[in-house]
Amino acid sequence: MMQWPGAYCNTKQGCCYPKTGKPTADFGIHGLWPNYKDGSWPSNCDPDSVFDKCQITELMSSMNKKWPTLSCPGSNGVRFWSYEWEKHGTCAESELDQREYFETALNLKEKINLLQILKDADIEPDDGFYSLDRISKAIKKGTGFTPGIECNKDSAHNIQLYQVYMCVDTSGTNLIECPILPRTQCGSDIQFPKF
Image 1 (cartoon, rainbow, N blue to C red):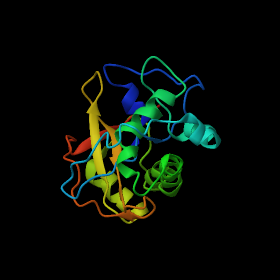
Image 2: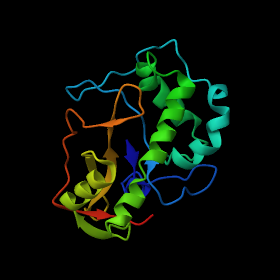
Image 3: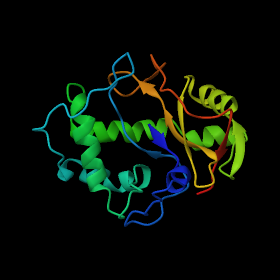
Image 4: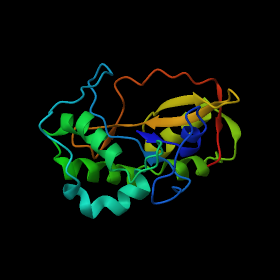
């Protein structure tokens, strides 16, 4: 799942930039979550498999850029990545060890350049409103697969593009059609906020 930082920061809780500074205006990784075919997902599958920062030392620079945390207080991302590993990554251990889990998510981010896909369809993060159908079709055209789109509301009650879900096979490398897309609370027109 990838998240648009402008929409995250426009929520009531606001956001705090990581200690590395304001992230670039691009979709950031929120997580790589194993799902069941019915759309539900397992979590916290192995309480003995704790996050080990040493496993991803070589990936840290990329993770700071592509998997930033915007939660408050600002941090270096380790707490967020630890949470993602323990809640979701441990449920993928039969396929991916800790390093491979984070590396796979980073590789997917490179493979799926959502911002460029949307820009190619003249959909820009300019506070403009775009039809949900147009956004969905642009992502499908750019990836070959139907996305799940999640929206939020800003303080002015504008419905905004918040997160995009794409499904992958169990290896985490190949996109597939999602068996079930998440239910969306988006309207027919949604704002793509600036960041």
